[in-house]
Length: 359
Image (cartoon, rainbow, N blue to C red; front, side, top):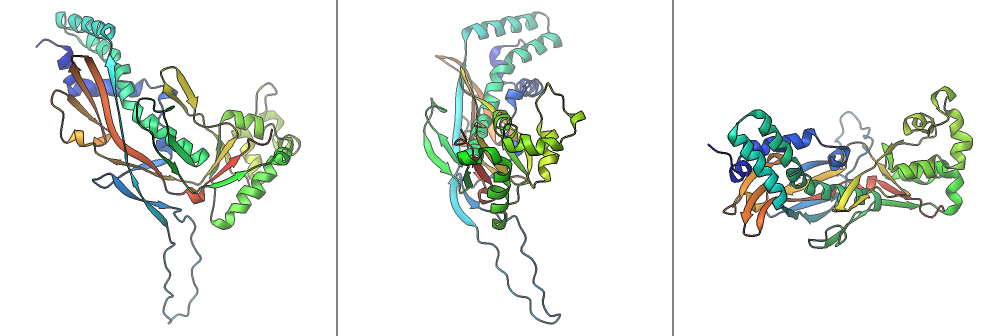
């Protein structure tokens, strides 16, 4: 049987092989960050879900009672709740005639002399087309998750979604602290007193402080207090005078002052064909508790149940999304479909420190 473009793109085994190859060859820019913070959870069939705000992370001390007395009835901590709804995501990518012609050359080569080497070349050729479809919805979730962690608000606007719709802003009740210019020289003390100790009575216990590299270098390492007091605690044989200090070196020193460990996050996302942004902003520090902080709510797209005639479908993420190919009068397209939304469940146990006024 001769191999054709139609047969190639409708063969689930070949499509799966291409997707697997794209995972193997993924770069740091392809990394999906939201999985570090969220677990999948299925929404109701209509796409709605109950979202809980401020899940209790501490445990209230037990009550001492007489051996033969009744136990006091204790109510569970009241959770703020609301109704959320998943969002629909989808894009169609047109394969250019130039790429199709190159693909046809590979197919003709295989049809003349079928062998595994040419199949591998075909798989490698298709990797970028399917990579776009596979990663696009996850990058949207990455941006939403980072916006909520570092600003408390997620916006889906025309700038980040220029071919789609604008959805209502998502705002979570996260603890926001803003440092003033007078705090610049005593930033470590400010973090300890105004963030860590101030929020501890509210049940906040932070596992780490997340920031981008610029914030770490300019605000933490550049702080007069750190230079004059905490840098001295680092063993000199650990420090190369020609390189910058790393979080791994200074975290043990700062922990003595009750400061959570520092984690550098660089999450670059391409928002358009020629624009890439780091969604971890300068001068913002996110204080995060241990464990997962929420859920990625999802429902199966209806199109996966009621297929559109003429499309060839491949299911991904255990049935949570699909990739499809189609041929129309306008050309050949690869597309994806997914329905999901980020739901942060521990916002009141998190905090954002804004350092933009330090100058």
